[in-house]
Amino acid sequence: MSKFKTEEDALQNYDSSRYRTPDGYTSDIAIFTLIPNEESTVGSESTSHHSLALMLIKRAAFDAEGEPNIEGGKWALPGGFIHPEETAYEAAKRELKEETGVDGIHIEHYGVYDKLGRDKRGWILSNAHYAIVPEENIKSREAADDADDVQLFTMDEVFALDLAFDHYQVIKDALEAVRKDVFQTTVVKNFLTEEFKLEDLRQVLLAIINDPVVNSKPGFFRKAPRLPFIVEALDNNQVPKTAEPTSTTKRPSKLYRFVDVDIIPSIWR
Amino acid sequence: MSKFKTEEDALQNYDSSRYRTPDGYTSDIAIFTLIPNEESTVGSESTSHHSLALMLIKRAAFDAEGEPNIEGGKWALPGGFIHPEETAYEAAKRELKEETGVDGIHIEHYGVYDKLGRDKRGWILSNAHYAIVPEENIKSREAADDADDVQLFTMDEVFALDLAFDHYQVIKDALEAVRKDVFQTTVVKNFLTEEFKLEDLRQVLLAIINDPVVNSKPGFFRKAPRLPFIVEALDNNQVPKTAEPTSTTKRPSKLYRFVDVDIIPSIWR
DNA sequence: ACAATAGTGTCTGTGAGACAGTATGTC
DNA sequence: GACATACTGTCTCACAGACACTATTGT
Image (cartoon, rainbow over all chains, first blue to last red; front, side):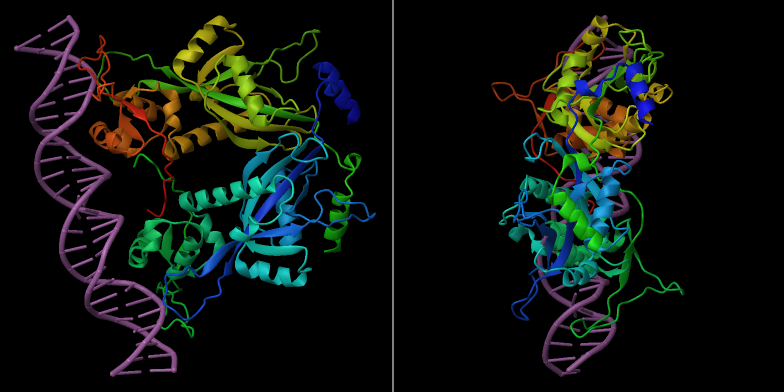
C-alpha cells in the first residue's frame, strides 16, 4: 500500500512534504435536548414548559500521567479524533453513541473550524455537528455517569461557562443552526416521540424559536393540522388516535405524526 | 463504557504520532455564473434567457516532468491545498481570485468530503465552496486564458463530462446548495448588478429555480416590489431611477436594489 | 400607427390574526 | 356543577392566482 502510495506520489509529482498537513482531524458534537422547567406555581399558562439544553463534558484537569491537561477544567463539546477509515459524520455518530448510548439519532454537520491557533497542539481541524436527543434517552445516561464530568446546561448557563478552545463560537453556531433548521425543516420531530400531541409540539417550538404562529395557541391549533407534513395518527380502524388523559390534562388530545415530505420554504412565495 | 475512559485518557495525553493525520487538506470551489441562451427565433417569450453555468478546469494529462498526472485529462473544480496560515474559506477566496481575477465575491461553504479513497494520493480532505460571479467578470477571463483548460459549462453539459475525483457528487451538492440558498436567502443578488430591473431578476430566478410566483410574470411584478428585501433605487432627488431603453427594450424599466435584512422563511408560517 | 416591453386593475378564493365560544373530560 | 384543558366558529382584512387591460417608449 505505501509502496503504491509513493509510486503515485512520484507519478504526479505530488510531494506531501511540500505541503504542511494538518496535525489533527477532529469531530465535535453539540448534543441538544429539552429539559422541563420547574414551574413556580400552578399559575396560568404563558410560560414555556421546556428549555433547550446542551450536553457538555468537563475536561479533566490532569491526564493519566498527572500532567496538566490541555484546556483542563473547562467545559467542552464531546468530540475526538476522526479515524482514517471513517468520515467526520461517522465519527460524530460514534461519539454520540459513546456519550449518550443512543444510536440512529438525527445528526447534522453545520461548521468547519480550522483557524490556526484554535488549538494549541497545532493545526487541528474540527468538523462540528449537532444532534437532537429526546429527553428520555439522556436522562438515564446522566444518572449512570459521573454527574461531575457530564452535565446538561440550559443555553443561558452554557454561555456563562468557561469553555474550552473556540467552543463558545462553535456552540453559538450550533444554536443558530438548530434554530434555522427548526424554522426551515421538520427536525423538530427529533425532540418528540413518533406520535405526539399538538400542544407538546407547540411547547417544544416555543422553547426553541419565536414565531407568531406558534405563540398564538388557537392559531397554532388551526394551522398545524393543515400543514402538509403533519397528519393525524390513525389506529387500525382509521380512527384518529387520542392520548390517555392524565391528572393534569383533562380532555384527551388527538395524536399526530410527521410525514416525510421535503418542503423548501421560499422567500419568493 | 470503560472503552470511553481509555479513549478519553488517550485524547488527553495527546501524542500526534499515535493518530494518523490527514495527508492533505484542500479547498474546492464551484464557480457559478449565468450565460445567455441563444434564442432560436424572435419567437414569443416563455423561454428562459439564461442558463446556470459552472466553471471547470481541465487537469493536465502530464505534469511538468512529463509524468502522467493524477486524474489527468478529466474536468475538475478549481481547488488546491490549503495553507496552514489560512482557513478553508480563505483558501477558497484565494483560489477564486487566481482563477477568475475577481475578489470580494460571495463565497459559501457547503460541504465536507473526507471519505478515504476519494483521492488515490491518500487521506485527502476537501472543503467545498460555491461562488457566484456576475457574467461580465468571467467573460474577460475566459478570453484571456487558454480556452482549452478553463471553460464554462451549462449544468446539463457538466453532468455529461468525465469528472475527476468525486467531483460529480461535489457538483451535484453545489447545485443543490445554490438552489436552496436562492429559495431561502437573497444570494441571487450576486448574479445581478447592484441596481437591476425586475425582469432581469425574474430571468435569473427562472434559470435557477422553479417557483409559481416567479413563473407568472404579472404575479412576480406585483409581488417583488413589495418584498421586504427589495426597494426601488432612488436618485439624489428621491425620484425612482429607470434604466435606459435599449434596442430590444422599449419602455424604460424601474431599477431596484436589495436591502440587507435577513429573512428566515419558516415552514410554520 | 404599430410593435414590443413594462407594468396595473380587478375579481375571487383562501388563509392569517384576533378573540370568543364550545366540547370533553376529572373532581 | 365547577373547572381545566382541548379544541372550533366567526369575523375581518390581506394577499395569492388568474387574466385582461393600460402605459411608455422606439421605429
